Figure 1 (spheres, rainbow, N blue to C red):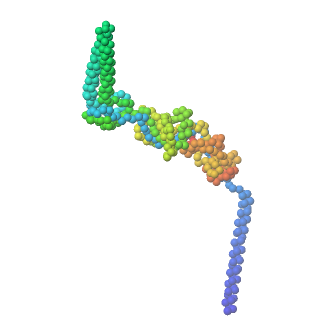
Figure 2 (tube, rainbow, N blue to C red; figure 1 turned 90 degrees about the vertical axis):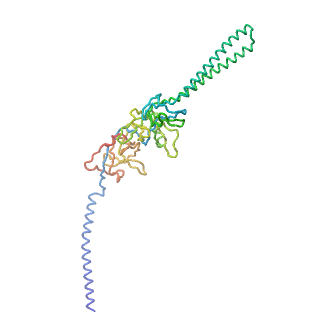
Figure 3 (tube, rainbow, N blue to C red; figure 1 turned 180 degrees about the horizontal axis):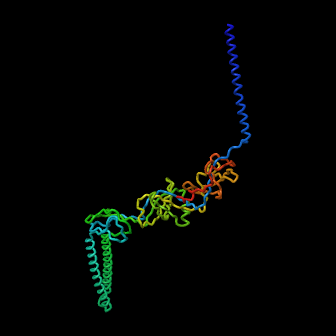
Length: 393
């Protein structure tokens, strides 16, 4: 029993001694680290290192304010030709896809019946004219006889009324002749305007009626493009239109050459469901680069901001305090400057609030605070924004 107690006591003593040695060993490095920390704090004085940033010099340039929309090409006018009488096609004077001028002969219908009616009306008018001439001679003779008191006044009056009726018949005959000539003119179908002929649906010998579509004529020069813009742009459109012609550019593809026209129409109502306003632009189309039904991209230049200050959009910060940018002052500190975005285009934006000679911070601004120390990145110099020199697309 005594031996067992002695062994336990000796073991406890060994453990206590080892623990005391270990604790004494750890205290020394800790004290050394604390001393080193104090020395380092004394050297830096507790100051934060300057933030590494990149800056850009603002550009001054004219910035066009452009509204873009998808548009479709629509003809100024298009005509679907129908006959105005029932007849058969005698001759087709045109070909599909042909360009015609106003008044060009397009179709000839069988007009034999109309020509016969014209001859009949002329003969009727000649007969009525002869009757009227005979009555006029009788009336003059009756006046002479009445003066010599050979006939009564009633006889003269009767001839007078007969003469008036005959003259009326001559007038009716003239009107009937004109009506037959109008009916005969329907047998010659001419182009009502200049344009391009579409598909021809009839051939010589075809029976045509009022509902028969012969072909279509579409005017290609000039030509319209129609598109819609947000109702928020209505004020800018109306203001631009008051200041003169509003330029509209249209492109049919990424590699296609842009063509320029002028705004010609602003609808009188805003679509309340879509929140948009319909507009049209008129284009010269002598080379037929625009085709009816074609989809194009329209760009409307509503104004040009002259000598605007242009900076990268990446430099602009928006939060609950407003919209601003950080600029680097001469003492290498960051200063916030409130700005207003006038127009954004591509990677850049025209803004107000800057003089144009500042060094605007573009990178490293996320951790900045007003008055914070900043430092340019290695080998970084204030650079001008190369993209700002490109006009708005």
